[in-house]
Length: 327
Image (cartoon, rainbow, N blue to C red; front, side):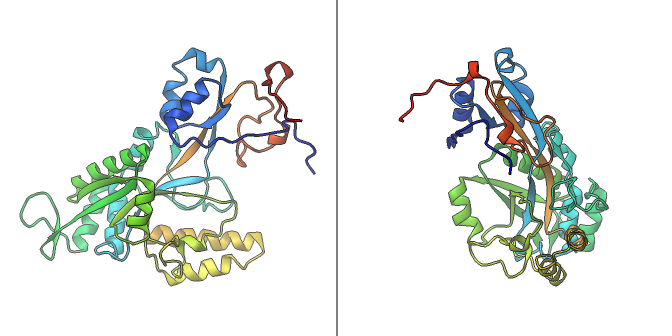
């Protein structure tokens, strides 16, 4: 349908360490990589030799970062407590401070601007007074005057667990600071990814996590939110159980009419926001550096992503790499 691609062969290299990957980019050993906000906004723009050979692209990414509660642990089974924490966290502060403004405050688990994202929903605003009022309503008080709230003689304290990801760790620090201001004592633990999954996620042995979800093109999120998806290794590891959401997810995956599906998923996102099983922290941008020898890239990047129309990319003859052929 699209015809022969202009570039005959693409090679993908897996380089787990981000710094090593960046060194390879600078040495012209790779042509493209995804960037973090620091490299995109500060490091590359400050180095003329990099700007001379690299194009920078920004697109709204297919993922979001969130803070998720273990709903099987008290007091996170109380909607008032979850909402209070949502109001106590400054999402724009995280977007500006951690992602250097390269993110969007969201209220739905779908990519902003797509038909599945409900435009009527608004994120929880930063409102510490409302947070304190909700916690008081839920029975929390500072009886001994130490600045930490208590209920039934127990201080309100929990641990945020995340993987060793700089942006998530920094986000957790800002969350910790804001929650301390309303009387919640938070500790942070950053764990290597494999240990994080086996020790905490699969066992359900955590209070709160800071993680991200990557989004597919289809709006079906049954495997993340349906109450039946809670076994070890399944994706509903926060233990979310809402019969209304279950029903909407079941309807959504069997409905073929796009307009009816849209209404179902808009309602699903509305119920989810009201219930607050997670705190949406930000939807980040996909940030890409691409060697200028690669041409034909659509810019600005369309919603489908930088790879849209990649069959039209080409490399002018003078800039092609010389390779010995095995033929």
